Image: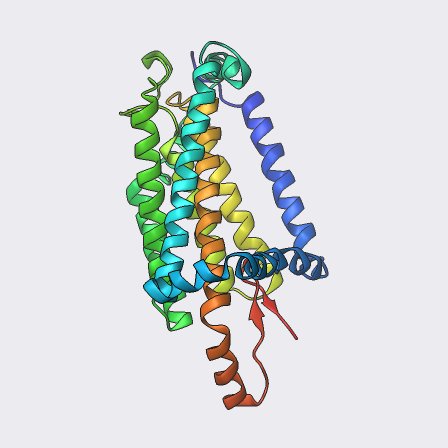
Length: 314
């Protein structure tokens, strides 16, 4: 498994990165896409679900609100989201039991790891070892702290800090639970370029990168970066980091394909849950206060923000 200097993996990664950069540049140069994005990400579905839930379960929702308050109801919804993600993880692990027999995507696990091990390149060994450390728990914690501090300062609110704590701690609990339940061994030691301990499924680096990366990108675009081109750059960087960290775990021989895919799935699902619950809480708790404050200051109702952070003008 001697490493080559520049080969098929270098060409493939270069082509993929060039494609991603070209796509990001194209999107950034077409700000009219923001209007299309807003029509989809304003999430009228949330409003419809809220109306539908109030119509059919108004009594139960009012009782929950009376008992817990709106913050308590939001916490209950967040807990329900967490349980839903855990249930989804258990369902995925049940499917994995069949895949481990050599069916489905799992049949590519060992061949992919072996192929990558025989096509390693000297400069990629060093580069992807550095990239994989960006997904370490310590590095992810630094990401969250920095982004939460910046967003909290810009928003003059503790909400970004709360979201960072929920997002980071939540995905850690989910991954630890799934690893313990599945108990899958990592690839054979001859394939590994770095030391890695614990169970293999799902990849904690991939899950953490997806959860932290997407949540940080969303918070930055909601509270800090408002220009279209800047938001495109933030999301492009986040997605690139998520993909590269996940791929680095495969390249370094410490995870299988299914491990990384499962990690991305869990991280994305958890972040989506946090974002949706935050949006729901914002729509149910703050509109009246914001409207009163907006009319007091300017005589106009302030613009709302969509769930993905963009402003919705009126």
